[in-house]
Length: 387
Picture 1 (tube, rainbow, N blue to C red):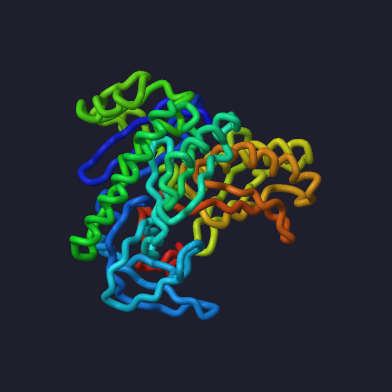
Picture 2: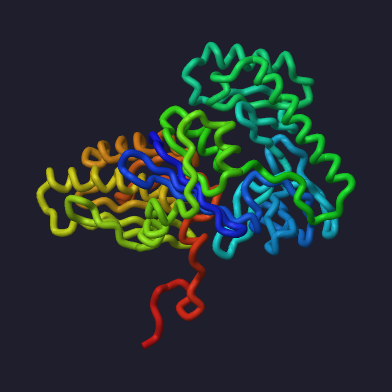
């Protein structure tokens, strides 16, 4: 997807980021600074040890945001944690609180920079599979290995090949310093406490879409100056950016279950605790060729809605017409193409034995529905009440 405009709007402790392409709004993200945001590092306190399946253990951890976070005792490349209630542990949020579930945290900390990801508990150097200039990526990987102290790991991000060698080296030093500061705070502060807050996500969006981005709209002169230091395109200041560009109305639409398709038919989107179910309603279309066209239009709109609503986990889609693979192949290809550059890794699994197309999408942040609504205390989320 090629974003052309980003609108940033703050309201008290919350702020929103809206991304537009040539067809209109394509992504909305809302952040509340009182929540434990993905990427933040905390000194947490173990409040409960719990037994999991297969004789494994996990811990409920107080990180100071009012909700207990979950930590698995086992993590790849780390020794299994053996802790008890009251002990302190340094953890990083990898999945934010959603609905009734608290955040998910890990001990395997990773600090994300502009060009690099610093991995203190890894011992190798990797680079993003999205880098097309493999030769330059390998050259930079060799540079990082040369400058590494041997007790750390690094990942070169996609944008790294656009940086100079000196910028890469300087960022290595910067990220190491941040980690040392985290360790210092962890030794001197009392849990629960925030040790490191990730940078404003706006700058991550700017880096992600820098090749096509033309304009960034912000709400204050101070933020405008900060953005100008990281973005060479047009920076515009508007006090009510979301209202000006119709984002507030778009959020209301994105909370509706029904999405009308331009050429007839509709989508019915149901978010449940176990999965997201999407039904493609043909709206009376019966001819095979017309159904094929409807399904392709629906596939493109589904990919847009997945990003717009930040749907994640298991997504099950029931398309119109026959579920035979020969009819579904073009739809699968369309979904894979539309989700290819999704920042949250998405995988189209193909057609299930029940005839549905299934998608797995990485869960990092709450969906738009989880951010803006709470479960109804009367019907407990069923949408139905006694007469």
